Every structure is written in structure tokens, then in C-alpha cells.
Length: 375
Image 1 (spheres, rainbow, N blue to C red):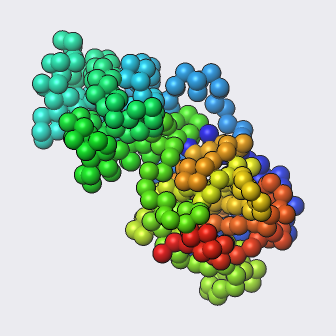
Image 2 (image 1 turned 180 degrees about the vertical axis):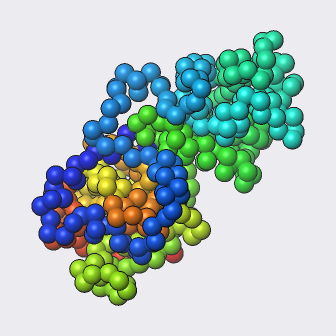
Image 3 (image 1 turned 90 degrees about the vertical axis):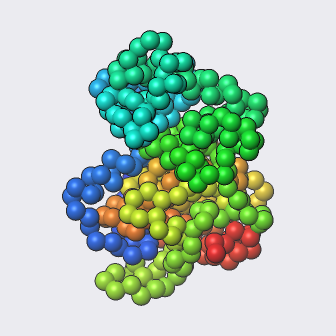
């Protein structure tokens, strides 16, 4: 999911109402979390500004961040062996053992890569499963073998190949072959999704979605457009409202809110392009991706706000259903309830536009006309 550009920072000062205040109060202002909880949420979020220090050559090399114990080079080498994104390798090792060389599961899996003894005998090359220097390279060899076993099913789809390799690790390559895809097991489907999400939000150096996490693989619906938050529910509409404690100007809600039921206080579900789009800018303070319709007129403008992670960069051209980012609670004035704040702008709006500049229009009738209104 490359990271957001801080395009909104200079323009925001030109608006009458502070941009952060406008977007922060889109559903209900939640109470400020305890300091410790807030820090945990910030660490779990991944939003990169244009002023980031990541070097292009580091990105091209598959470098990762947040790998402990100086094991980053081991992870990158294993990723190269496996033919997987380094961020995915890091996320999987983290999930399997929490980077604990001495981890042992109830089933008998051992070490940082959680090898069963029989599998270790085939891939460990006589090393020690409780040593990261032996286990992480062995993990790379094992994942390369799993990838080869599911290659025919994935065909030329690089995203699907990563997903199937992860599914093969969790459920076994035989199950992937039996179902000709990711097996319909809840555990396996959640495993694949959680690793791809963690790869982006926890280990990617540019907050970019790894291969395997770039396209929504769920139901896009039957409409001309698709809902921007699949599985989300409508929670707050456009226009006047009466929320106690808010100033008069904030009672004029200039978008609609959609939320995933039970998303909790942190990152929610995947936000996707409702139609073909081109990404035109960002407002990092409030986790907003700004876009324009990329196709036939009328070329509406869009804002997808409170995202905890981005999957796009300025200039990207997206197809209907391509991933934009992760539903979240990022706001300039403190924690808000996890949801997507979604705005549509008049086609006459400039490429980079913000609320209360006179271009907002009600998204509800448009989404309904396009067959993309959430249930």
C-alpha cells in the first residue's frame, strides 16, 4: 500500500476552517486513548509523507524495516531465495514466533521459523532450528518449494502466487491443489490476509502493499461501481446533523461514513477504488487519499479518509476494486472510531481538493445510482 504525500499541508492553511478539525469529526469523536494504547496504534499504522527518508535503492533491494536482532539481511536473503516480498517474509516470521529463536509450539514446531522436525530434516541442511542464522535461510528454501508446488494454479498472476504460497504453508500444498486456490478454511484465509496486512503496515519501508495484497479478491457487487469499503455498513450521512459538543460548522457533514462492524479501535478492513481512479494527492494528517475518476466524464473527485495505511502513491491509476488502503482511525485531533470517511467532489473541482471549498456533493445518491451503496 507507496506512502502518502503531504500535499495537503500547504493548501490546508488557505481554508477558513482547519482541515484537521473538519476531517477529525466525521463520525463521533472518541475519547483520547491512554498514552500507551495510542503509541501502540501509531506503531501499527503505516503512513509515509513526501518528506520520508527512504532511499529508492533500498526499496529496490527489497529492504525491510522493524526486523529485530540485526536479522534484516537474513530476511532479505530468504525473501530472495523464496521469491517473496521481504515484507511478507518478515510478517510471516513475526507471526509464527514473534522473532523468538527458542519458540516451541504445542505441536512441536521449533525456532524462529517454527519448523516441524520432519520438515527441518528436509530443509535445515544439518543446522540448528533454534538458530536464526540457520532457520531463516531454511525458511526461504522451504517457501521456495511451496511456491513451486502452487505455481501452476496461480498461472501468471503474481499476486495470487504469493497468496497461494502462504496458504500452502498454513493448510498444505495438497489443500491448495484440491481446491484450486486458497482453501475455504477460515483459519487459512485469515492467515493469508493478516500476513499481507502486517507486511505492509509493520515491515514495508515505503508502506507499500506487497505483491499479493494489491487487488481486492472479494465480491465487487453487480453495480457499475463497487462500494469503497466491502463489507462495511453505512453509519453517518451527508449534511446537517446534531452531535452534542460539536461546533456549528462541524454539524455540516460533507461526506458519508462507512464502517466495518466490529473493527475495533485500530485498523479495519480494505478500502478499494469504487471505479477507475487516478491518485492525485494526500492529506496525511487525517489519513486521506485524494483521487479523480479516471475514465469517461464527468470525472468526479474523491477523498478516502482516516486510513491507517496507504496502498497507492501519487500518479497511480487504479481499476475498480484495486486496493487504496486500510480503514482506520487516523485523525489530526485525536482518536476517532475506526471507519472510512468518504467524500465525492464536483467534476469541476481541481485535482487536489479539500472539504468546505465549495466542491463537496452528497455521495449517497451517486453510490446508489452506481449500484455501490453499502447495506
